[in-house]
Length: 120
Image (cartoon, rainbow, N blue to C red):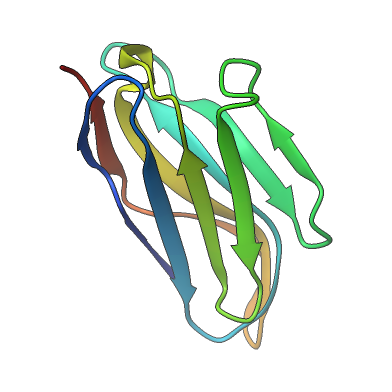
């Protein structure tokens, strides 16, 4: 299983970005998909998660500004980020939790990060 994230870049404060992450491999189901981030000198932290049924969970710091969504048919998760702040600057990682497939039994996978820089 591989997770390919894209959509990072440089944006001014108040701007928007949309991150995408697609899973590849022989996958039947992904129970939870999510986004995490790690700023320089800080630990990796949860940004948002979405379960297979659509329920979402957000970090308090991004509530009302970020929206997570998923497309199960495409095995993809998205993160729409609005009203970006300099403190949102970080490497963003997607994660697929409890992945089930032909030879996969409830494993977790991380994608390589994509850098988001919020600066004027």
